[in-house]
Length: 343
Figure (tube, rainbow, N blue to C red):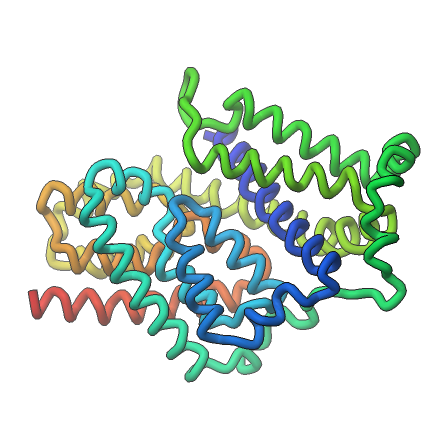
């Protein structure tokens, strides 16, 4: 159990940090212009984050959380992504109930857009004070041609700094682990899936960036900003959350508990949806497939749960995490009750 938790922690933490690294790279390369259109147009934020949330697995949610941490998208746009995303269950549902999954995704997208708009209208982020001074840093002295000069790559690699060596070494180990299926769940060889390929592509992109950027960019933006400010925090919170989830799983038989309490199954679905983990939601997918619960309960559960997607948010800002979950619970409860009484 502990080995599995450690592996998942490494994968989640490294993926989130590399996403941050890529965003930082693009931001400096474009001198901060790439995200201005998204920042200035709220309607575009909702559409982009809603689509990213629908990407099967947690890749899209991680990306949106990273964008929110850097103030590219609003809190409402974050809510949109957390509503539309339902984690690794998407792969199971696509395989077993593809038409229902398509229907669920379309409904979640519409609810996510509406939820994001209403959240930004009624919730003012300054009221709970979070993620202060987390905007991207653009240094006045930076010159794009000097910062990203591929001709100097070989010299930088020959005279490698500790920071570059540590980042390259860590990413190479993770890439090797992905290629050899070291991070796969269960014994034996596991066939490559879409999410595993995505993780590898992101890591290779991060490897290229670390190997080619200037020492100034590496030290100021990657090491001081991304690694020092975020790495330990995300690592510890992710590990603690996953460990508690595994302990809880081994102590409580959730599925039999739910089946013996049909009257409160909707409330249980919302409560279990708070857990930043994909596994528990599979219970409701299974119950729905077996005809034990209505579509409205599956929908409500999908609104609240978002797989591992919210773990980096928990690490960066507990207030944002709790508020996001509270909003999603309210929306999930409202949708679930309407569905139970009307259908």
